[in-house]
Image (tube, rainbow, N blue to C red):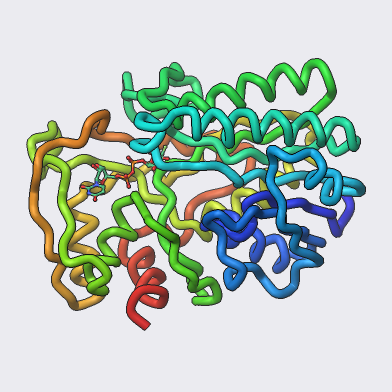
Length: 325
Ligand code: UFG
């Protein structure tokens, strides 16, 4: 592996992308950010990047400006609101499927054959057993999860047919902000629990709702595996090293192996911030499984990776810097 790799990061101004860009810059790599800035924020891009290209993965002309000479592409640019994907599926077909397949085609045309892909635990659907390991059947419950699975299947084909080497990283519930406080631009229109909790605490929204307290869990609210975005970022760096050093494809969960309920999340946010969360318990949201958490043995074995910052208190301490400073 070249000590210093030339890395193109699509969606590098977005939430997980910008944290990974920082991690890659810390490790001394030469990073180019490619983003259409529909949701990304320029202020979140590490100043050490080599360049920033405003472009769209659906446009081959934009990609032609970015891909030549790259060693690897990290692909974050995608829509990710599972609920929205059920109301407006074609939006997700276009960006997450057409856009990604166009990126892969252009990579192959330009001889860039290493790919680190943001996949999701949403590929599994309702759990048949816990923890969910990588052998668990894939049966997405929402269209968003299907778009990620469709790309994983295409990656297998393009690996076989064109020699692409890939890592598909199945994230559980990404959360938190840079523990060093260097990334502070808030996610726009968040749809996930922890930013909604922080927006409520910060008074950006007057109150929030908890979707259901009649689930088959100890406190009746759903359990998820919350993984800090700095931990996700470090896993990406290790996944790239694995691809270069082992030359083998990788499909792996990124989670902590521990679940927390919605009420535990809210109570920890209250404790860490010293402020009340104004919430109301309402009916269930469609498609929410009771309990989801990751099997983490494979990531530990293959990548030597384990979450370091993902306890709920560390997560909310990191979010306070963004929402309450
Ligand atoms: N929740 C609330 N109120 C809210 C928002 C969420 O009670 O305002 C609850 C949800 O019902 C759920 C939990 O908080 O029980 C977490 O919900 P999120 O929307 O934050 O996350 P999901 O578990 O639905 O999905 C997330 C990502 C997916 C990913 C999945 C993997 O959005 O992309 O985690 O576990 F696939």
